[in-house]
Image 1 (spheres, rainbow, N blue to C red):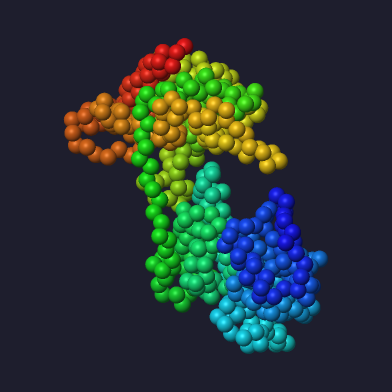
Image 2 (tube, rainbow, N blue to C red):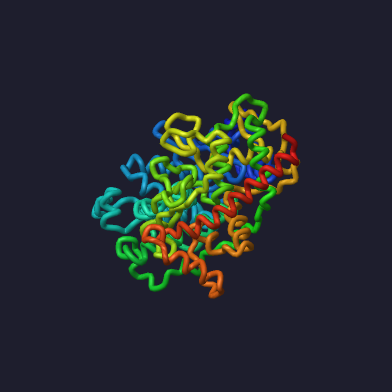
Length: 511
């Protein structure tokens, strides 16, 4: 068997038999594939290929005009795969569309998988068009009138859903749902998609990715079906569905874990000192930019979400006349995390303002935060902001994580894991949002912590809550609506605690 170079498929031309299918399954089971996979090319049927990847084997028909997926090797024996290839050529000569061909192949594959003989499977799956059959609708007409195919549901639901999502979640959500298009039923009518199809999709995603990814795809699938059932049942073909069975029947044995890690103030401060001292990591001369270093400091000093914080505009910051030396950083509702225009009032994002003490501003200035420019935390690329992804990568470098390089190389970290080496448990920028309110709660400023993080406050009913509430409601309208004085009290205590800890860690680490 010919080996495959990295990024390519190995190849063997021969008259295929079930022996080759057995070999293909063995390659997968033993994880013996090299490169991207292996192609068994049939010399008996022109263009027929059994493509084997690390997780599956698939029958393909390769032609000049493109490649057609015939079915899974577990569903189609060699003889049936050859018949399917011949039927595809015949169907195209008769003028059948790709949609019709794909549908018939899907039926043929499913029927064959149930052990029905090839001749009977042919009769069931591949039908000759009747002269009286109505002409096939265009994609646009089918989506307007119905009945929808699964790919129509995916596209139309995303067309509605994506504008309600923000930032990275928009891209992630689309990926979760579009994964379902690779499960073998994109051209199947929605009303014909059954539990077996959806479970196969779930298992395919879990095998190719993770159980977490499968859970995300399942939830997106349920949301799409719910939307179609509630708002477009006739066109989706779901008008006769009395109960949305997918809600109860399509499940995933997975529960996302809740992160409980709360870094200590000493760990946060020590990390900031190490980040200052190790701007160049990985044996390169390329240093972390001042905007990114300042962003890490700002995350610790403010506890804000990295998405909104790294995109802070200088134009949306202002002085606070009542408190000389203080600044007020503001974010619009669109910049804050939320669930979009269709979210409930409790979940919908709101504008947020945060008072920044002069001590915090001076600390950011000391670490090189740019004093001019559109963004408070700019990227190295002119005109661009730093990003949450960049901040995560900065933390990964401190943790000693290797990085894929060009031409298959790896960027090593000679300094190894700086955090563990200095007694710091691994933490993420979001973890600060647990440390800050925990600390302020111990300082009897729990209301201030919630306000700083833009969380809705839970009623305590104790004297501290009454004091904080009374303080908030006696302020002028803007200050009242944003609870700036309450936030300022918490920020003053938190920032000074962090800065004192930083000085102690500098002395402890030397320098």
